[in-house]
Length: 145
Image (cartoon, rainbow, N blue to C red; front, side):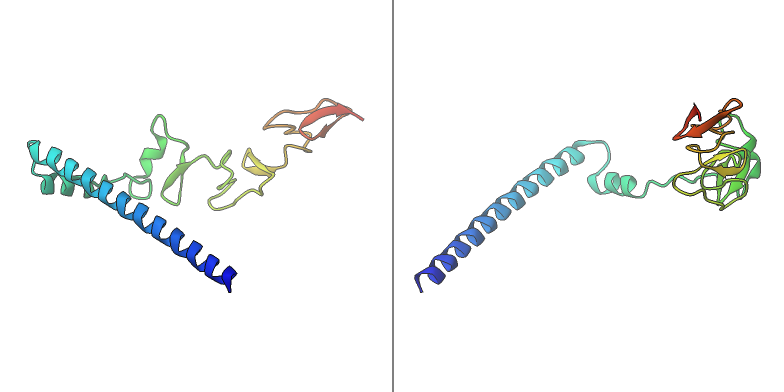
């Protein structure tokens, strides 16, 4: 009987402590909000208008689906358009060789083909790292057998 009373009193104390700390945090947040409102009111815009402008700020993106020529622009990731994004299908792991063709987790895209750089002699450790004659690619390094 004493043990259950002790547990009940302990739980009651924990609940009281948590509720008072939550209430003090709520009061602190309200104080901060009031302070921010005062700052916004003193600016050249009213607080309601300023917040509305910040919340509804949307930028329109130019996609290659509507304007395919943007993929040829300088600084573009690639010349092909896949799922409204410019990509290079020769090197992109998610669009390797054609749009939507994904390479496995241990593969990379080299010249439009998914290869495993850990064991591929033509792409050992990375694209176009060819091992010499008599060498094998082991864990991305060219080694003699």
